Length: 202
Image (cartoon, rainbow, N blue to C red):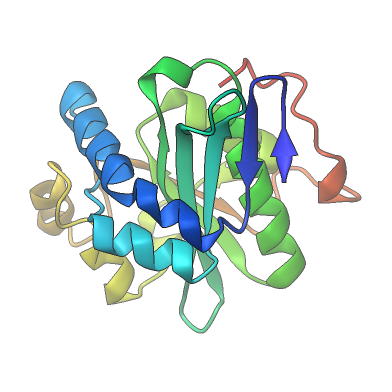
């Protein structure tokens, strides 16, 4: 578990935190509408499943243990690709470093448990791109991401899905970013030491 003065980040999220599944799903849907972003919908059932599989991180306010943020990890192509999905921070809690804490927790887990896997993501968020770059990701064409149909099926609920299909899954509104352990943008002797002093409090 990682924390700052106001929040704690729990990974893996305990099963009793699946009570937040509906609220998390609603927050993702609201964010997608507000920004017309590349956010795909996540059903409460899917979120609950990831929590109970031990693949999700939940951020909580320390003062009242209410929901502050969420993200989860998935594996594709026989664990050769790892992705962080469903990243969301409650509107009242943005700008306080929660996304950075959650991304860091999942990155360390992925590097420790899948050291040879490529870690990737799709995003339209400039702030998330900055976090990814500091972790060692670099922007790549979609052809370097997973070819697993199961992953791309998750984009069906995104407002830009028709663009993705039109371009044969080779281009869309999101930036494709990847951390390749064989050729990282930057390297860390020990991922546990990453502190994100320059995280801009995202």
